[in-house]
Length: 105
Image (cartoon, rainbow, N blue to C red; front, side):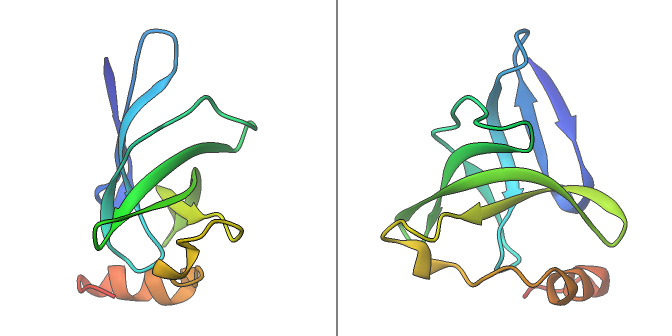
């Protein structure tokens, strides 16, 4: 297993075949969460996975993006799934400013 670390405390582990096994990803509310049910990438840019928010499983995808100029693993929930309302929509400017100040969203 190869652990790859990114900005803002995000990271992922990848096995010898390049498959993602475990990840700590940044959610739209500014909280780092552990991704589970990580599937095979459905596109070059995103990897399906789930996170827990207040004990509820939220389905979405993990992707790489820039916040404050650094590569970060981000979680975006699927809008058509039943627990999408548990996370706000992404506002990268707001989250970036908060992370730059060292506080939570």
